Each structure stands twice: as C-alpha cells, then as structure tokens.
Length: 404
Length: 131
Image (tube, rainbow over all chains, first blue to last red):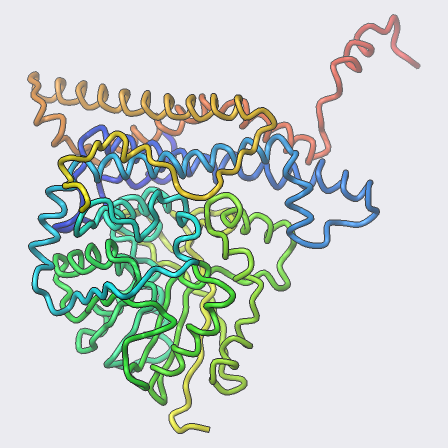
C-alpha cells in the first residue's frame, strides 16, 4: 500500500447555510480535479524546468551567447517547447473544468441558496450595498482567474452565485491546503499578529477587497471585541460573504460595497488595515490611490498588513517566468506588473515615513482536520510549485503614533 | 429585470466562458481541443468509477441499495485512501505519455539520454567488436 498522504476530499470542505450541497457525483468530479491538479504540479510540472534547462536554455545560449536576462525572454523561449505547451494546456483546462463543475453545482440549486442568503441578509444593518459604487476597470477587464462573470456579474436579482462558486472551488484549486474553510491566508495574518504583536487588540479592522470574507473572518474571530469592516465593489460576493459569516456565527463584521480608492470612513478610523491576495487584482494607477487611502483611514499607531505573492526583484528569471504563468494564462493580467512594483516606494509615497516599510514571509497553517497525519513539513507539496503552495510574502507599515 | 433562478438553464450557465482572450498552447489548435475533450472524458470516467465503487461497498455492507444510500455515502478513512490510490493511478494512466517525457528529460539530465535508434542499429549491426 502506498505511503503517500491521503488527498483531502471535497467531502471534508467546511460547510455553512449558503454553501452548495453536492451529490455523490459532483463530489467525485471535484475530487478528480483535485487529484489532477496534484498530478500536474507533482508529475508534469517538474518536466517544465527540465525542458528549460536541457533544451530551451542551451538553444538560447547557442543563439545569443548568454542566458535569458529576464522572465519575458524565458517566456518567449519556452512558448514553442512541447512539454511546456502540454503542461499549460492541461493546467488551463483544469482551471476551466473546475469553473464548469462549480457553476453546474451552484446554478442547479441557486433558488434555494439565494433564499438561504436572503433569510440571513434581509434587513441586516451589517450588509451595506451602495448602487453608486461601480466595479473598477481592473476588476472587469477580464474575468478574474477564469471565473466566468468574475466576482461582480449578477445573473439573477440579489445574486450570490459568484460567491458560492468561488467558495466551493477554492478547495479544489488549492487541494485543501488553505484549510476546510479556505481561510489559511487570514489565519496566517492572525498568527503573525499573535507572534509579533502579542497582546495587541486592534478594535477597528478594515479588510480591502474582501470578496467572500474568507480571509477577514479569521481576524474577526481572533479579535472578538473588534469591529471588522470588509469592503469590496462586487455585490454577489458581499451578499454571499455576509450570509456566510452570519451562518458561521461571526457577528462582529460588516460587509460594505466600496472600492479601496474611496473607503467610506473618516480619517484615522482603523487600527489595522489588511488585504489578502488583493494587490495583484488591481492596477498601476489604482495601487498608489488605494495605499494613500489606507494611510488616511489608519489611526496613528496603526498597522497595515498585506498578504501577497513574492516580488520578482532578484528572483531567478525561470522562477519568475513560472510565477508569471497566471498573468498570461489564467486571467490575472495585473499579476506580472504588480510583482515588479516598488512596494517600499508605494508605502512611502502614500505618507508612511521612510523606513516604515517591512516585508516578511507567512505560511498557511496545516488544517489537521484535512491532513491528520501532517507533522511539521509533511503533508504539503515538497517541491517548488511556483506559487501554488501557500507560502506568501507579506508587507506592511506602521503609522507613527505621533505624526512626524 | 433579471430572470428568476428557476428559469435559468444550469447546463448553459455551467458552460459559460470567462471573458478575456483564451490562450492556446499547442501548435495545432484542433489537437488542443481534442485534449480538452479527452480530459473531460477522463473526468467523467473517474466520476463513474467512483460511483461504482460506492455501489459495490454499499452492496457488500448491506446487501441492499437505494438512491439515498448513494447520495449519503461517505467513505471511511481507509476507503478514501484506496480511492486516492486508484485516482492517482488513473490519472497516471491517462497522462502516461507526458510522464514518460519527464522521465526522458530526467535521464538526459542525469547524463544518460537514450541514444538514437539509428545509433543502436548501427552498434548492433557491426560485424565485429571494434578493438
């Protein structure tokens, strides 16, 4: 019998009142996709690096008498390689199949799911929708990570389908490595705060670009006396996120329709401002506007903390090329430029003092409900998979207690 | 006014494409479409196999069968491990040709690439060992 760790089944996913119910075959379909994703990352992906080292790079060196200088040269050189083409074609397909499976699950029971969300949302002062807020161009230029309709498209009145599809599918895309409730990012933020600011109890927390609130909820749970404001421009994910939070018994959070460039809050309203996997879904024009707004709403002595993928500066061109795959092939068009940005400069130009920028590494906590055998260092993907394993870079800044 | 959920066609909604120009990777776009269809079939076979597995286990356990039993069946840890093992082998069977590409790349990386068949033919066809 194989000693490989068991793969978490979608059957083990965390549930709540607005989470879709799956039939036997729908679960089997998701589990096939989880296994396919793992096969692609563990068995097929290593060949992409070998193809680069053995035939693509030597051919490049033979032609130009030097190695590729950056990820763009690597990409152009790799595009004609058959193994890279096959891996990419399979990966793109697995993304599309996951969307198809998630939407098939959600739309056949949308009437029931919407009624469940309505029951939790109706008249709630903690769900604040504002029809004057429009999704920015960067959120609608393409359908983010190949989600048809992205976060914002409403197919029915009071729609929640994009939220339900997103929630149901993250578990498949990440093979459960973000935990039963796919909240590993938020938990990593909480862990870092617990370790690095022991005893600190922020009372007012803002999470920007919250989508379904899966990374904001751990903050609300870790700081039960705090009031969390989670903002996003897309109504379907806000409705879904609000109902999800209520159903999970988290009441110290409100979901507000707003963009990061214009937070509906007074100056100095928050002790902690967070994002999780947010900046790469914005734009070069939006980033400084949003960071200025973060600085404005942050109280003196407050902290801002952002979970992201690592920046490309100083990174091996092949590794950066692999990490860039989603930008070109999985509808993450700002991913490539975002990871070139000078984040220290971004923070400083937004008003934080020189030297206040910091960077750190965070890892998702292994969910032992899903990986019961997991000891430290076990159970996750052992080899480099260029951003699929939940190890992140986080950056942030402290706002001085007394203005400089 | 948007349609009511019960008036939507879930099959059409499930197949909706994502906005944004789709990248194609293989030189022949027809081949890539066949690959997509093959992977969808692979998925459906996996689903069917898992349903049969459930049926067999339930029949073995109880000697009876109902739809509710199938929908409600949840494998224990041992059954899940067996399913994972089957699922791994199943995907490996389908993607064997690509796995073998990786093996060849690994062997070349270790300095032991296959010689060309022509070279082997030449070698085996030599009339006497070169000395």
